[in-house]
Picture 1: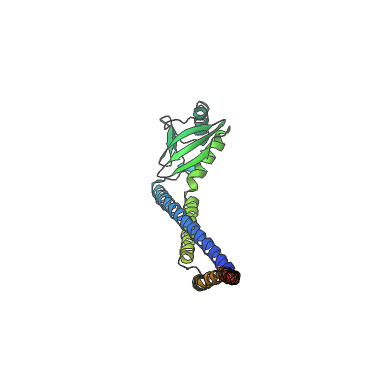
Picture 2 (picture 1 turned 30 degrees about the vertical axis):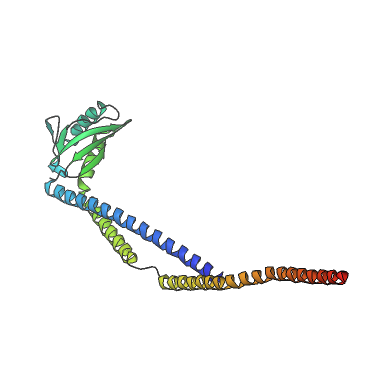
Length: 239
């Protein structure tokens, strides 16, 4: 019973180890997919940084519906007016450009956003304020470097996690030898019990045979005695 319990315990631990290995393989696959996406985004943001032109200070310039603006408030008013015409859950075609990128407007319920279309996409908010809308748009343009650093940090972390999991994946089940020893001992006990059982069977059969023969012998002897007694009586009567 003790060896059976040990085999069951170690077998359960081995199943848990196998499940852990499966989960680690799945996480490594997910991390690899994430890393691939991050690598693509990093390459796109870097390309956008090369394309971007500054709109800071007096360098501000943008187009809205083929009209060029150097005044932020006027440009903002034009954008707010265009955004108001976009229906909920719809998006516009390109409505202008800023910083070297085309822009469009899309609306979710009552909230409208501006999309900056580079190799990567960036969002800015449309507010009731013309100046606030342009401020959000320029902030999105200025955030390229921050986005790049975030993606690079995420990529490094993803690769580190994947490497740590890969090291754990190479570790075998730590109780494998102990399980093999216990399983062999269990089999030895089972085999020994089978041999003992097989050896005991002929003896049991022989004992049963002997027991069954005893009443039969007694019956034969009793019958022989009865016949002999009867024969003597017949001889006496004949005289």
